Length: 364
Image 1 (cartoon, rainbow, N blue to C red):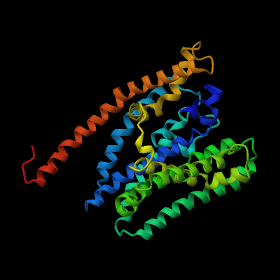
Image 2: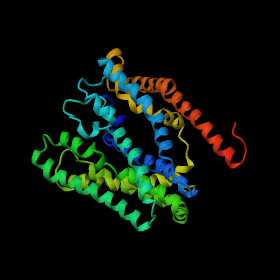
Image 3: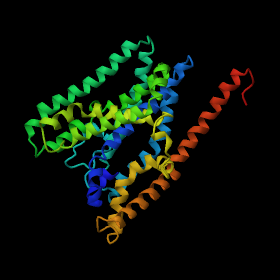
Image 4: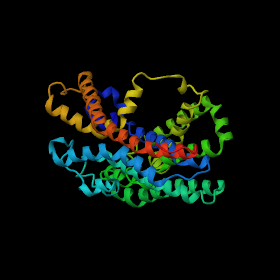
C-alpha cells in the first residue's frame, strides 16, 4: 500500500515505500505455502484432494468481494483512481495481467497479482494430481528447478530482445507489462511457498531439522532480501550491470529470502515467532478487502477531503489509514465474510455425513 501511494505520503517514507512492491512477493510465498499445505494434506492421510471442493472454496473466498468491487469500477466512473481501465473481459477472465496496456489502463491495475493467484489456484491442484500418480523426489525437484530456470530464461530474453532496444525512456512501461505483471515471470514466490509445504508434508525430518534453526533462517533470509534490494535498487534506471542481474535472478533471490523468513516465523526457535504485533490480526482479517479498495478509497479521500489531504504529512496519512480500514471493514463484513460463512454452512452437512458414515451411524 505504501508503494502504491508513495507520491502522496511524507518523503521520509520513500526509502521504505520504494521497495514496498516486495510485499506482494511475500504474499506469493505465504500463499504457496498455505495453499500447498491445503492441497497436499489429503495425501498424508492416504487420500486424494477433491478438485471440486478446492475450487468451490476458492470461489466463495475470492469472487464475491472481487466482483462487487469490479461492479463499482464499471458502474461508477468516479470510483476509479484513474480514468483508463482495461476491458471488462480481462478482469472476468483474470487475464488483465497478461494483456493490460498500462500506458492508458491503470485503474484497478493492482489486480494483476490476483490474476497470478487465480492461475496458481487453477494449475496447482492439477499439477499435484499428475505428479502424485508416481511420486518421485527427483521428478518433483526437476519440475521445481525447471520452473525457476524457465522464469529466468523468459526474463533474460525479454530484457535482451524487448527492453534494451527501447532505451530508458520506454523501459519502465515495458518492464511492468512484460516482466512484472505476467504470471509466467512471477512464479518464484509461489514456488518457494509450495516447496516449504512439500518439505513439511513429505520430508518431516528435514522440516524438523530446519525448525531447530530459526535464527539461522532469519539471518539468511534477511541477507538474501538485502541482496535483492541491492539488485533491484536501480531497476528503472539501468538496463545493464546490477539492475540487469536483478531483472533475471532478483525474483528467485528475493523469494528464497522471504521463504526463509516465513519458515523462521513458524519455528519455535526463531526470533520472529516470539513477537505478536498489536493489530496484526485485524489487518490480516481485512487484508483482502484492503488490497481490493485502498487505491480507490485514497482517491475518494483526495476528492472529498481536499483540505485534509492537501499535504504529504501525518494528517493526510491518518485520513488515508482510517478511511481505508473502515471501508475494508465494511466490504469484509458486508460481502466477504457472509459468503465465507455460507461456504462453511454448505460444507458442514457433507462433513457431518462423512463423519457419521465413518462411525457407522445414520447421518442427521
